[in-house]
Length: 298
Image 1 (cartoon, rainbow, N blue to C red):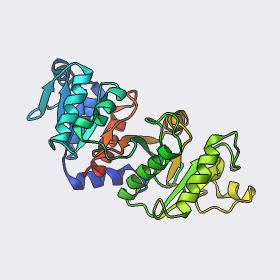
Image 2 (tube, rainbow, N blue to C red):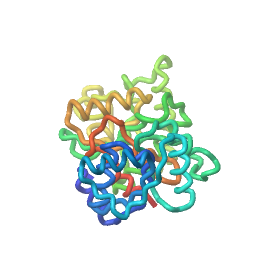
Image 3 (tube, helix red, strand yellow):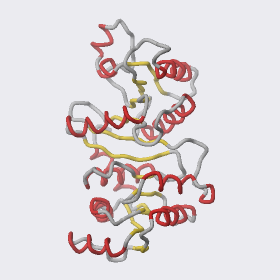
Image 4 (cartoon, rainbow, N blue to C red):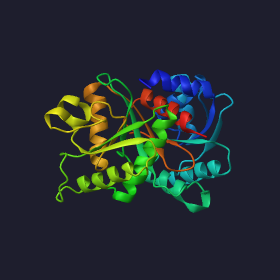
């Protein structure tokens, strides 16, 4: 896919997917949920402070008619009620609202709700960047702080699943570092070497995995030639695997604020996808996150 028009079109074609909105008493969250409902891509169940929800609705002329609202103000109770609704099959997707991310993910990982799959959860930032010719995934900039090799394996598998659902195959993956040389003093280069070997052994399916790779080579075939490196990924990656959460977060937000990129966020690895992005993001980014989550929901 080259841009979000295609993602939204795919979501519209799938119809309204039932979402639980955990912490719906946030302006951008509620507005995005109602807009997505009107566009035909989600049917929200709102959990949150009902007075605040109605006040936001009144202030912005939002139509709450026939929408289920569960009144709750405690963050932990909101998260647990959301997880229970998902366990009971009353919704197929989750939207993180005005509650802390750790509180919500703790409920998702609580064994009583049966939402775990055996994989680590990881965050996907799907970017539409004006200067790039197709959509790009940056991962993980939101969940796993300093992933080890086992966690990076799941992060990659999660990202591959997402990009394949969007219609991309074979998938081209750049494992980012500051250098193309394997250096014992730069741990992510050692992990990159192992992940490339796993890719060559077919452990990631029809994916082309290359790294360690500096950012310039990831996006420039000329840089690869100058560095005397043969690459099938240089200039054309679908997925960037970053060394840690700080790198991913800085890179994605930098592209939004300096390169006018569009962004959506989703946490994957559980039985249901979770629309989740920075609380500072605008309504449009939340709307795009809902569209992506719709496409990934079963």
